[in-house]
Structure formats: structure tokens, C-alpha cells
Image: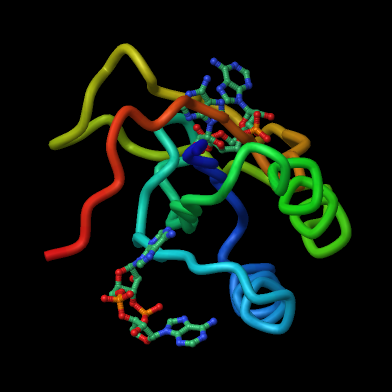
Amino acid sequence: MKLVLAVVQDKDSQRLSSALVENNFRATKLASTGGFLKAGNTTFIIGTEDEKVDEVLEIIKDNCQHREQLVAPVSPMGGNADSYVPYPVEVEVGGATVFVVPVEQFLQF
Ligand code: 2BA
Ligand code: 2BA
């Protein structure tokens, strides 16, 4: 069994969630925050059989888009001065950042 961890943009999360259910995959959605943009994104946890991982990855690819996002200057006040961006910059946010990790045990009590 594998655990697929996918960080996706909030705009795609509903579509991806529906596609996973339609294809009979079980998933858990977590509200998360990107370390760089400090904006909300969604992390999907999908536990599935090894042989179904490719299918999950296809579903993620088909339902998550790349987008350009403008990062406005943000005051470091109350935040971390290390990550201060002094001028607006455009960054390309990927469709999805995905990790696939082995599952040692899957238990449901
Ligand atoms: P949910 O996805 O909201 O699912 C709630 C319950 O609905 C499930 O309980 C299961 O009994 C049923 N269910 C879910 N998907 C189904 C499907 N495709 N067909 C028929 N019945 C379905 P649990 O299995 O106890 O799961 C409770 C929660 O644990 C799930 O909430 C989900 O958040 C998480 N979860 C379960 N299996 C997972 C997995 N393989 N990967 C990631 N998260 C999982
Ligand atoms: P954020 O950390 O908010 O990053 C949003 C986008 O900003 C990134 O898109 C990337 O294009 C850019 N970016 C991030 N860090 C940067 C840096 N130090 N310098 C210049 N540009 C930078 P993606 O790479 O598609 O990542 C989207 C989201 O996926 C990230 O949101 C983060 O939540 C997650 N992510 C990406 N790589 C990760 C990793 N290795 N581990 C954990 N989470 C990751």
C-alpha cells in the first residue's frame, strides 16, 4: 500500500475530490498553507494499493492546473523577515506537488 500526499491549489480541490470519489478512491483533505506564498492550499491524503498509484496520479494530473500567481509585497511585521518579498513577483504555482510514500500498516478500528 502507498500513501499519496498531494498539495494542490484550493481552486482545484473540489474537482479533484469529486474525481477521486467517482473513481472509487478514498481520500482525506487537509487545509494547508504554502510556506512561500503563505496562502491556503489543500493537501490530499490518499491511501491506495500499489497498483492503483498510477491511476491516482493521472486523476491528480487531469484535475489540477498550473497557474501564475502574483505575490504582493507583504510586511514582515509579525512574520519572518527572512521571507520578506519587497516587490510584486509572479510565481508559477504547479498543478500539484505529490509525494508517494510506502505504508507500513493500514488499520481501521
Ligand atoms: P470519508 O471519506 O468522509 O468517508 C466516511 C465513510 O464513508 C467511510 O468510513 C466509509 O465507511 C464510507 N466510504 C467512503 N468512501 C466510500 C466509497 N467509495 N464507497 C463506499 N463507502 C465509502 P471510514 O472508512 O471509516 O473512513 C473514515 C475517514 O477516514 C474517511 O472519511 C476519510 O477521511 C479517511 N479515510 C479512510 N480511508 C482512507 C484512505 N484509504 N485514504 C485516505 N483517507 C482515508
Ligand atoms: P508555496 O510554498 O506557497 O509555494 C508556491 C509557489 O511559489 C511554488 O509553487 C513555487 O513556484 C514558488 N516558490 C516556492 N518557494 C520558492 C522559493 N524559495 N523561491 C522562489 N519561488 C518559490 P509549487 O512548487 O508548485 O508549490 C506549490 C505548493 O506546494 C507550495 O506552496 C507548498 O505548499 C507545496 N510544496 C512545494 N514543494 C514542496 C516540498 N518540497 N515539500 C512540501 N511542500 C511543498
